[in-house]
Amino acid sequence: MAKKRGAESRERLVNAAADLFWQKGFAATSLAEIGAAAGVPLGNIYYYFRSKAALAEAVAAIMAEQMQAALEEIAAAADAPQTRLATLVDLLSHSVATRTERGCPIRRASAEFRDPAPEASARAAAILAHLEAWLTNELSRIGASPSEAQASAAKALILWQGGIALAEARRDEAPLRRALEDMRELFGEAARQTRLAESAGAPLSVEPGRTGSV
Image (cartoon, rainbow, N blue to C red; front, side, top):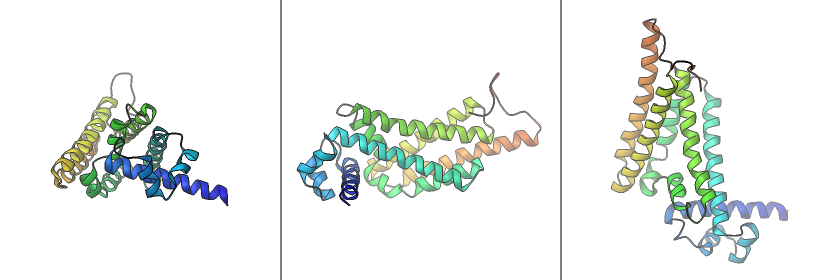
């Protein structure tokens, strides 16, 4: 029972830290605030985490797990890459309001953890790299060449992150919603180009010595 309570307290601390770091920023958030939000006495926090930087590492780990779980759920629900990509855009659309209000928690963590918690910063940045690799793989499965898939995946991330930044700056959801629709169109265009090449009997664009898979 005590072990279960300890695990629950740790989870509450991580969730509270994630929310406060996103809302207020790492530097502006105190351990006392995190403890109060989690319902854990300040002195007890050090039983679970030796420092605020250690909490940042736990927050980055949770964000990575959440992204991985989301991508696995998308993959389990459909095999067709076009469907997976469309489902991802749908999923990102669900967070438009919070991203407009607070920005991107992953980007903020990567930037704000850099000096006080470099390992946490690197892990947060790796989340976006992982998403880009996932996008590249799905675009390759559609039939894009490796270079085309990589370029489109990078463009999709730029659209998403740029849309979030502009939406947050303007306090207006419209830029992010437009960016997500542009992502949807980008993925749709990749599929259309593949269908056109196949219907014309032309080989798909593949770099010399490379296959279309990642």
